[in-house]
Length: 101
Image (cartoon, rainbow, N blue to C red; front, side):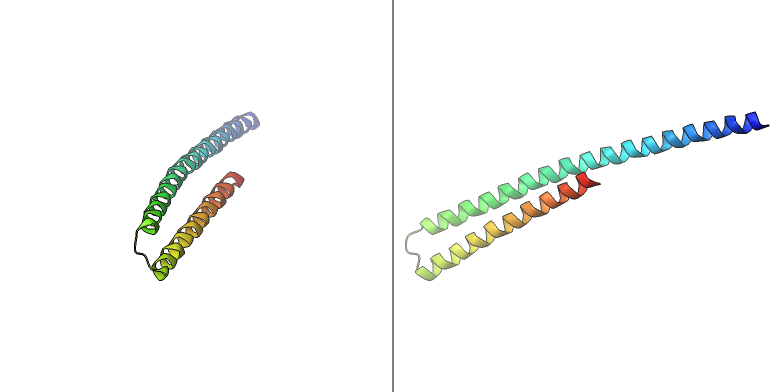
């Protein structure tokens, strides 16, 4: 009787270990996938901001801009730089949260 109980208990422990390890591998795979998706998204965001900055640079090169127009474009340029910095910080925070988990 005791031998049967130990055999069953040992089998249950092995199943539990297998379940835990399988779950861990699945979570690890999902985290790796999330990093990849986030990185691709981050690259697209930086490209979009770079494109926007190029447009604003071209706008500044136009002839006939009033000082007020220049100030508006420069304000937009400052805002886009600030927004990109915020997105970069969000990306870093995401990576740090995920790597700490």
